[in-house]
Image 1: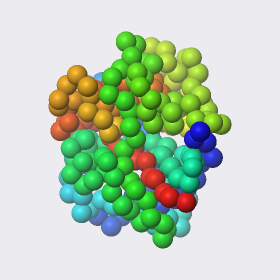
Image 2: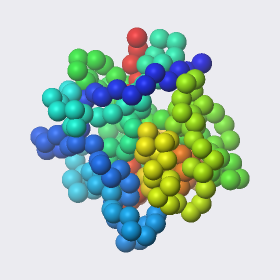
Image 3: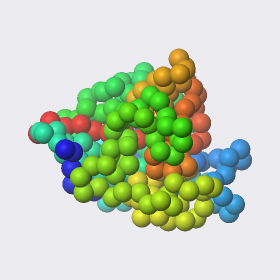
Length: 230
């Protein structure tokens, strides 16, 4: 069984030679069309669409300042370590953008002298009748983010309640995983739609949502998982 180990800081994200600190408001970046609740400030996640050239975006070794390092949830199973970003690193990036550079199914990256396979989590291809309950088949999102792993924090009932409110933002589970107002791409095409791709989060920790493969939106983005052989 996969086991939750804890949170680690490692690496950084650079754009055009400048280290970008992890977002302090890791949710939807434009509230004009969609706002989780009245009075919320816009998120400040970096937006790929402002400079859609992957040559200008890359992982770095761990910066000296802890506030600039990326935060990862660490899991381990049978000689493999998995590190999942604790928030979206980028928004206004499409599934196709990520696939073009290999970040959907796996591309090698080196951070602090360690080799990782960087990809998206699996998220299932079919939703339960209630999308708050996630996917119908086993997948990494429901296992890792959803709290099914050994020693992992499980969401509370109120995390799945509608509509969104400040209580969701402040919940212990969201404080760890930052799913509030942020929909993360996963690897699977949706079973019922050729141009649809599964994304998870925003309304709740295991909420199941579908968007178009090449769309860039202010609330949908990139939350990588790093895989390392031990």
